[in-house]
Amino acid sequence: MTRLASDHAHRVVGLYGDPTVSWSILLEAELGAAAPDPEKLRARLAAAIQQYPHLGVVPGIERITDLPAVRDRFASAPYERGAPLVRVAVAESTLLVAAHHGALDGLGLLSLLGILLDVPVSSGARGIGARVGGKPFALSAFQRLAEALFAPPGRITPERGREAAGDVFVACHEPRLRLGAAGFVAAAARATEGWNRAHGARTARVVAALGASRRSGAAPEPVHDSAFFRLRLGRGADVAAVLAAQPPEPDFPARSSRLARLGTRLLASRLGSTFLVSNLGVVSTGDTVRTLAFYPAASGRSGVAFGAATTGDRTTVTVRARRKDFDAAAAARLLGEFRDAVRDSAVS
Image 1 (spheres, one colour):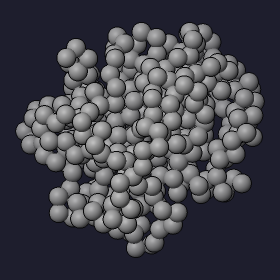
Image 2 (cartoon, one colour):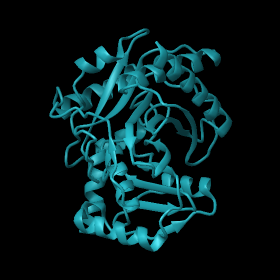
Image 3 (cartoon, helix red, strand yellow):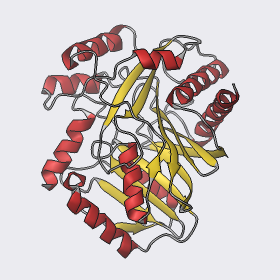
Image 4 (cartoon, one colour):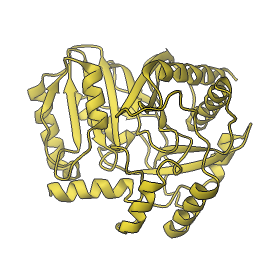
């Protein structure tokens, strides 16, 4: 079952998908009280994995002594075949949970957080229901290949270019924001324009990637049941209208060829999207979680993902970016552009 679970997780994110990233998603919860002890966390996790075997083998629970170092490792270490698909670390009042995106989507990771804390968790996310893809995978793959060769999506201008592994992570807490997926995508597009303009670059062919759950967040389970949208956004585009008219991308096939995987690796820098956005919505955990930072997987041309989650009176917005293109200071400035655009969207 272990190998079947890990094989399935890798198939979900797509054998044609970006082979240069770990596909690890992370949730960092700051708690209002002391976190459960590791033994209790492991027992709860073991019970969940027995009920949901697609989560693979039970991992050990780590104690956090250096949060940035553990976060980096949880995010960048590949999920090897047969290895645990879930990673958990705990400090006095912090719980860090990561998972392979093929095993859990954002709501699934949120559900697992609730299981570990032994509290009911829900999200105001409505989900897209049974909305299906508009084209077969073969046609979509051909169009993506042509796009990569002749008109690749625009990118967020890198501030540096040197060999460096992994990603950088930055977050900020805002007063509660009432924005849906379209609002956060529009804010990310404006942040991209502002960033590129400040770096003397033109912003063209913006393609926003958006992760969206198929189910509502009323009672999430620890599963993967989400869709993926690619939204082509012209200047001043009505993102809500584009999203309403755009079908999700087709699911990846169960198998791929060596030629397809090689082509994907060679074209990785030209495939994908300008950025990815994922919003967990308004999350209810009672008074257990004070703030919640969500870091989606960063892939695509820019290697930048914008995340958002709201708990209580706080909305936490995040940026995750490739370390080889952005250092921590650059990522913080990009987050500032996103934060300002989000604020503008919330009051407009």
